[in-house]
Length: 153
Image (tube, rainbow, N blue to C red; front, side):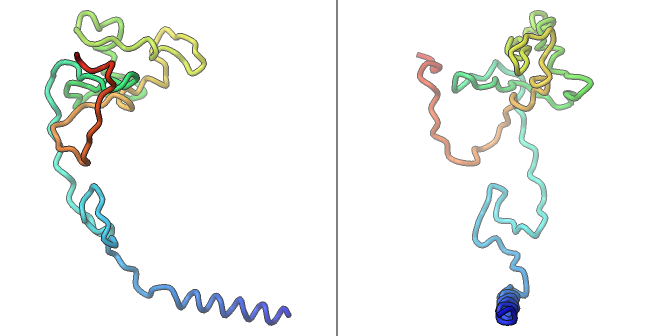
């Protein structure tokens, strides 16, 4: 019985190996992603940088808890463990003199609901949620409509 099971296993493995393609097909199988129809095995040139919109008024929000979008250029802003350029204008200490929007009080709360005297570590890296806008075409069609309570009447 053991010999029969062993023989069947060997035949199954041999048939499985024989069924594998000898050459890997490098095409995309007709699938086109947002990066275009470039084959996965080929390197293509990077897209050109999009033009970031210049300083302007705050951008309207589309839903209640949407993080505000950045309405200005941030190239060269340093946001790392040692410094956060955003806080030099948007921090409570400087917002009035710079005319920038103040950081929300929620950014001073810990996960457990304790209020800190400085920005919470989980909210310190602003660009995780707040992003600048570029002058680019939409990648996909979008028919999104803002919540009625946020639209101007």
